[in-house]
Image 1 (cartoon, rainbow, N blue to C red):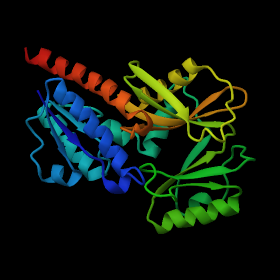
Image 2 (image 1 turned 180 degrees about the horizontal axis):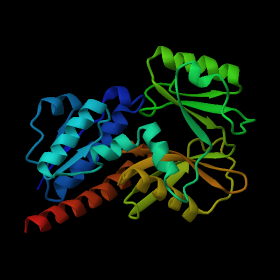
Image 3 (image 1 turned 120 degrees about the horizontal axis):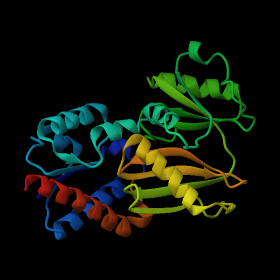
Length: 280
């Protein structure tokens, strides 16, 4: 069986370039031990490569043209892709929020998506946000420190909107600030493996919550955008309620890389066995 891994674009790995590369290489190393012939390419190498002849493709790449090429290869060859191009596109913020809205039982902070034009943002959202808003670019997740910015009032939000518009970002999400502990979670499956930790243990209030509730919310988010290898952010509020903030395809797994590589490789081998079964 042959597997291709595609590294993430450096501009989509701000501060995480080596971590993103290391988790993919660790997973591919596990696969090579598990009787799989592996190849790892940069996104630019993938652009020039045929892309056919593989039983499995493992893409960390995120740019739209590259994902559309990958989607074409998927359609033409039937190759198993984890995560598929459509699922990676589903993690683009505006699409992710649409999927969240269509997922019963999934909790996330009140959010509105708007264009970055002045006309679309003359007034604040109609939901209460006494503690302020988070303004987030509407396509990919963070590429720099200015892609997710806090605004304490609408005048400050307007300055952030203008900065987004100046960078030709077309859409933005305006999300109510939710007080609580910020949590990072990782998963494979959904249903195979799950773990979590505080973004900043030194400032976390360690508010009580049910672990099964966090896992259930994370897996609802993963199913909403159809990702098997995922990570994301959540807020635990003082009353123990859990809100999902983001879901991502193929995070860096930096703090749990060794364990995650084994769990991801296990999932990928399962998919490869399914391919072999279909081939007879």
